[in-house]
Image 1 (cartoon, rainbow, N blue to C red):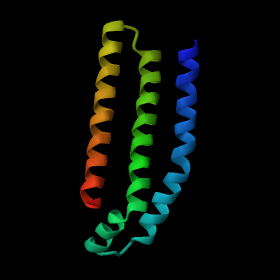
Image 2: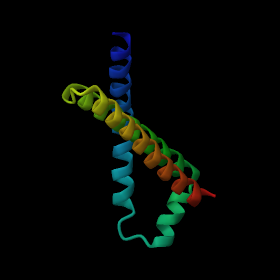
Image 3: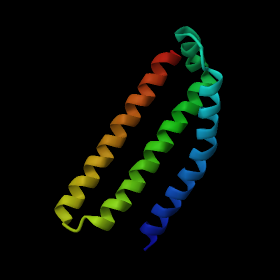
Image 4: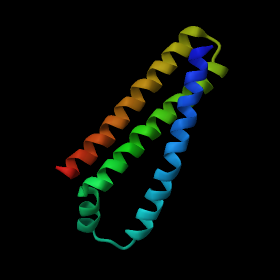
Length: 109
């Protein structure tokens, strides 16, 4: 039972963390409307923006992983398929988060 409670808390906390980051990203995108490629690149090269974009991607993929895991556990009844699907989701989330972080670090440095 403790594992389920911890899982639910992490999902709630990640949702709370994503909310202000999402507002910040939407505001930033609106402000960058009409910007050139170089201006957008410079925006991502700012350490402040890069940090919050990286935090957004890490937390978003964690939240995605937790949410999909709950759905799979509830609706996939075959244990072999459930384990394989959860493993696939975990691997995909880590890969996509890694690609996002790598892309941000590439622009930062």
